[in-house]
Amino acid sequence: MRHLLTLFDLHPKELEAIFTITRDLKEKFALGLREPILPGRVLAMLFERPSLRTRVSFEAAILQLGGGSLFLGEDVGFGSRESIEDCGRVLGQFVDVIVSRTRAHQSLVEFASHCACSVINGLSEQAHPCQALADLYTIREQLGGLKTLRLAWIGDGNNVARSLAVGCAKMGYSFVAASPPGYQLEASFLEEVREAVPGANVEQIEEPREAVEGADVVYTDVWASMGQEAEKQSRAETFAAYQVDCKLMGVAPERAIFMHCMPVHRGMEVTTDVLDGPQSVVLEQAANRMHVQKGLLAWLLGKQS
Image (cartoon, rainbow, N blue to C red; front, side):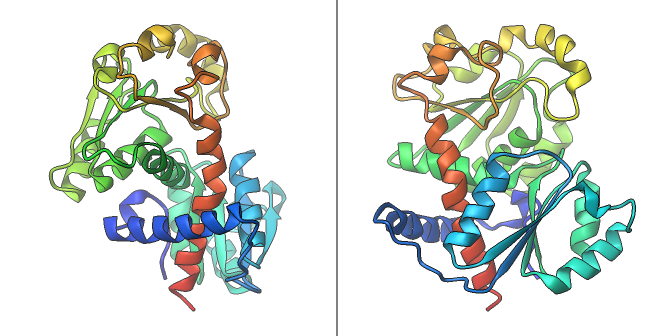
């Protein structure tokens, strides 16, 4: 049984297979075609956190592929009214795939270990693999001809940063994160990436300008993620020097693109002129969530048919 809990779970050749399916389905989508290649398949979404892009993009994806979806919120009692183990054993008998958006990554790992169907991480505090898949696909669409590529992450070393570090390593891209002390990617995590992908070029530094120099992609995210609302003010002060504005983008080559996984706080982690400017591919990136997840579902469920 295959799960996608982090991008460590995918081999580079499997990433390519998912992107090949994605490209085919997206081309057909542009022609108005919705190919029902997963008829009767049921996707359940087990969410402990709010969502816009993840929920809607997965619902649209499975519907366009000919299947159906169920949304399960906190009323399910995941880990409270019923144990995580029992939830996994029961739900896995009803549906074909589960997208879980959890507060604790370890709960997701435990849940998947008891599930008889595939489990996809729709976001945990440690990883957001579906976001990173869409990001990597978007980068290929926008900058596909580059033989070498450098992604500069500006800001908190959070779940998206971790997933992108792994994804970039597997794609052969360089990844550098610029973050203030106390908010950086752990040295042990970076070593884990290097061990999983020999030759991986992943690094953590402090200075934003240094990260952006020569970067093909400049990426940022909110300074306070879900569950960190109480730290919003202190983080705003700590990250003030990490705002992506036109001056910082000017350090990167003209070909560089700007990315943000959204939701976005205009005037904080990024200025409006960058977010809505010609280098921004934020909307294309968001749209690709659905397309890549169609590719992921087709690949994952197709392997089990």
